[in-house]
Amino acid sequence: MILEIRKDGDPVLRQKAAPVAVIDDEMRQLAADMLETMYNAPGVGLAAPQVGVAVRLIVVDDGSGPHSLFNPRVVSRRGEVCEEEGCLSVPGMIGKVRRAAQVEVEAYDRSGRRILVRGDDLMSIILQHETDHLDGVLFIDKAESLRRAEKNQAEAEGE
Image 1 (cartoon, one colour):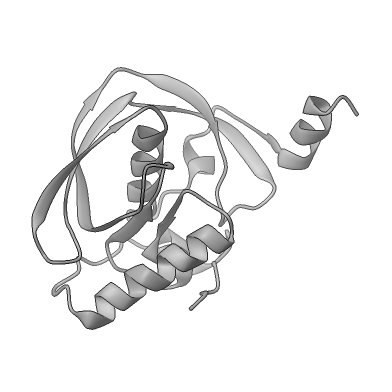
Image 2: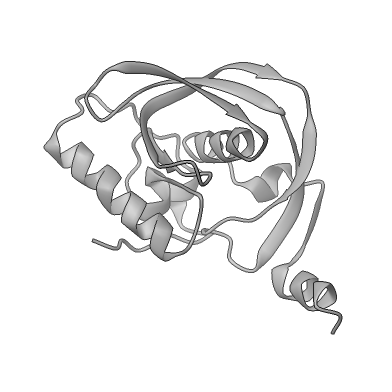
C-alpha cells in the first residue's frame, strides 16, 4: 500500500523516533509498504517518520536491492564527502551536505537477526540521511547550501 509522505512542517518529522520493540507482522508490513511508497515516489530511502510513524525503521535501495533496517545505528564512519541531496519530505529543494564517505550500520532485519550493513558512496549517504530522520533531523538542517531543484534542473538542461 502506498503511504502518504509527510512534508517539512509536519511535527512527526522533528520527533525522535522510538525503538521498534518487536519485529512482528505489523512492522514487516510497514516496511513493505514503505518500500512500495519509496519506489513509487521515486526515492532511494525512506524513514518511518516520513510516513507518520515515529519508530526507528528505514528502508533503502541504492540500486543493489532493498534493505529494511529496524533500529539502525551508525557504528563507524570513515572519510568525508560533500554531495547534493534531496528529500521526499522536502520536495523541490536540493542541498550540499557533508557526510562520512563510508559507514557501518548495525540494525535488525525483517527476521529479527542482527546485521551489519556497510555503506560506501551513495549507500553511505542514504544510510546517514535516513538515520538522521529517526532523530528528527532533515538534510536542510545540515546543508551547506540550498537551492530549488527545478532551477538546478533547468540549468543542467541549458534553459
